[in-house]
Image (cartoon, rainbow, N blue to C red; front, side, top):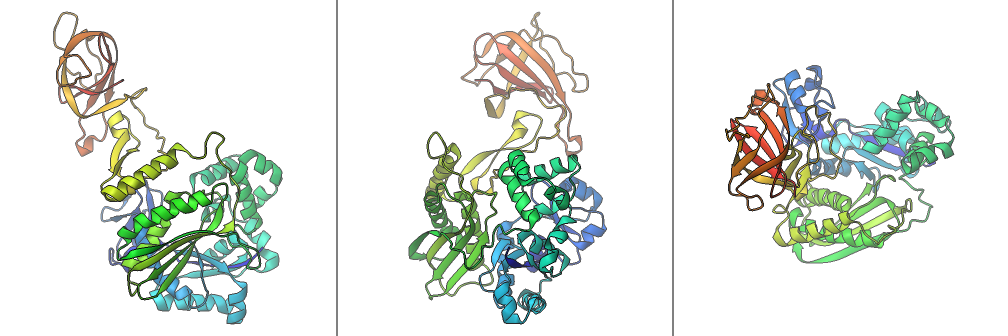
Length: 514
């Protein structure tokens, strides 16, 4: 185990927003990441707003709440001032994420005269450089150092295992805050395994058999082992990709295309291997060299998209932040460090559909502009139109859609084609009388026997209805003015099955099943 030092700036998303003057320090405010509240100010916390709340729930709890969208670029850009203070004491710190930094503690501790003096000098350097309040912890192993920083203490060598054992399983999310780790923690707590000590009482082989790589990572973290900071004496297998820039680039947006190309090149050279660190090096026309190292957790595959995000954040800090370099970008290099787990290549072919899609999207962005390419993103909702959205590719997320619950959702299968604009259609019963749209709260109607419409080439303008299903009434968000809706599925005699919605007293074609 390596003796590690960790520096933690609490509530960094809020601190970054305050540093850029977006919110007053004493105002009730929250950072929202399009799913839930990620961070809150002390004033918002006193008003009852908590992390994990939905935006509507947070606004209802505190009507004067200021809500800002999550912005990783802003957090990385402002954190550059904190890193400037850290580098006065420690060379080349490892960035876990903006607000959290790790480093080998042995050399800096000898230079500063001990571990407590090292912690004091780090805190003083950060305050002098940025004014941010920081906490420092020193311990053996990655997770122990992070938890020690949250307590602001130094853990002696012999106390590491005991220190970790009394923490709850949720402490594992301090380094791996992803869905897979959350599922492992939830399952363990369901079986009564609530602390890291309980988890370590299990055989390591059984944990690896049941949970695979994420279980092995969790066990190693709970044991106090190193997972991201190799010893300086260990040999590091480095794989790099770099490029000279001619003509030089002045903005981070222009450099983003180069970053994506280098990320794909580095990912190709890493085929079958993984790494624990990504070092980003940039040089400017004035000869200034900037270098930062980002941590890659062992349970995270270093994809081109993940690398591009980190490079884009860092370039924005260098080319557009307060620590603006004296010149334009002339050289950019990405280097992977630290041997990680081997994950091999797919059995059928050497790439995935997702990788090919990402490469095609990157080429389109380079031709048409990074903000002009849009993709379809899946969302949660009760009807097909609510479940999808067209968003800029740079804002798309690969995280899975929240499953609900969505009470009253329209039964599947979903239509293969959802019209951009719905088309009016008239429904008639067996006697030829027009069928009105029933009130959503009543939900019954006459059996449709025929239809009449126009404007959809795939569907005849009139015809007989062979089968039908429904109606499915839907009343939601009436306080926002969303009208009542009523859905039907129709199988027509000639043409594809239709999804029809009744809204505002009119039947309209929502989509069809091709």
